[in-house]
Length: 208
Image 1: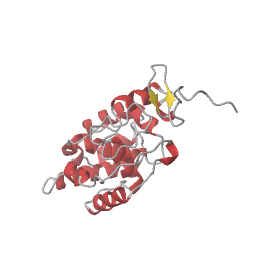
Image 2: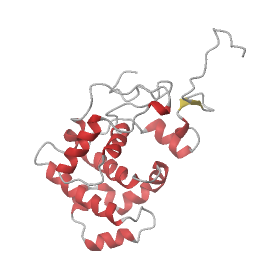
Image 3: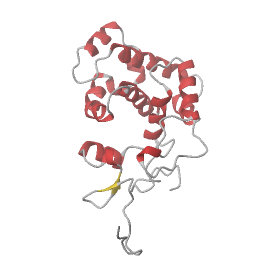
Image 4: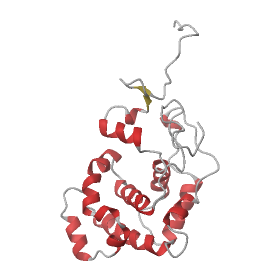
């Protein structure tokens, strides 16, 4: 097979070059909604309580489903769950559960709905200690993955397993190690942007 000249730049096999000339992973290269989420939000630091509670909740609802499904329903989730205000959700009762189960705009799963209410109450209890943000960010590892291709991205880590265990001890549900690893990716605790992506290192938390 003929090889191109050495001075011709080679496209990184892990990414796709978009029409805008930017390199992204395959999952963020086609769907405009996913592309915008990847370009502007995924992997950027989130440290406020409500923002973290929303992401913990949505990651829990995502279990067994695609993230694109959750992302498309996020406006409906925010409307149904009072903007993911833990104080308001903690006061939900069975009538609210039934209301949510009839809302076609969200994922109508009783266990996940009940877990979200319980997680709101657990979030409030954490205020007496370190708080949700400090707890989650305390599991930031010393190093972050450096994947070249999608297959090199792990789905769990010792830190995500430890975070899962601690959150469960604090009364949270639907916070398994894989779900918590996805959360850590989404909020910048780790950087799993592919090395060839235009977003690698953009969080300011990790060097490229």
